[in-house]
Image 1 (cartoon, rainbow, N blue to C red):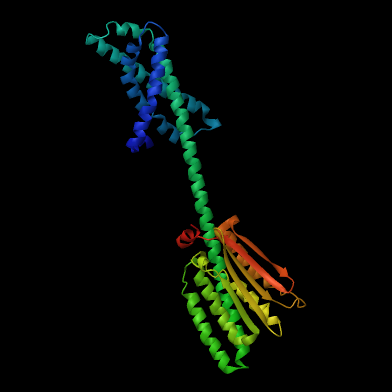
Image 2 (cartoon, rainbow, N blue to C red; image 1 turned 90 degrees about the horizontal axis):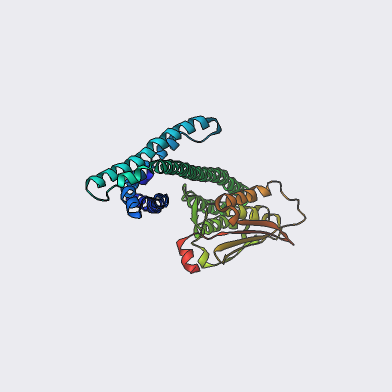
Length: 359
């Protein structure tokens, strides 16, 4: 079925669009001489109403016969015959209307006045049909373009979801192996602390596994998970590990990809504080910057120690996840500032509560 026939509103709009065309045809007949405006309106009004529906027929031809340089002969023959046939509908409708009016004793001589202008009306009908065919091809091209854009958007979404899933599957065992390694190193030195670390690790794993298959979580849950991990490492390092937090409450309901901060916290401990004999501090700063959230993670490190080869793996994961989730709206910066290693993330705050806070 033609798309215009599927909606009453569209059909009404389409028929109203024929009013200017009706006036144009009336003017052409009147300008040709020998026929009045009343004569033209009488014969053309019912004929154009029927012809308006006839001009919907190109949609079926255009749908099955796309444009192409190798089809011009087929297109010319098809639309040539179709335009002639439909133009005869317009001419026939006008002639039948003129005959009916004459038989009713109205507008005497209307048939004779119209007879000499049937050729002109036929030519106008052919032009209107070909114009309708062109508009149908244009509408189909727009529809095809929209379908292609929609399929491309769906493909990008599926690809992004697959990438996020792959990144997350790599991160989940990553922090587990590091934690078990920490327990192994502590078990031979201090049994009670190793047991305490196991208990805290169990809590940490319970919280992380509680995320299930959720890709997006509130920032407060992500921060709680990071604190849980730091609590595990706190048992191992004791006073050598100090954590400083500055977290704005307004940011905590913003949504973030799950396990986004975990690799950064691990790097801060493993490649920063762990390499300092006297230990060091990890500073976590979460701030609201207009419609965005800014997360800064700083840690001390020994600048004389060679940089570990796998330091950039966690940073690369975080950068890729930000790009996959937010595109160009997110920024990621990491580098050395004196004896401090600083990582800064910025991304849009997406949550209903955050939106109300901004308002």
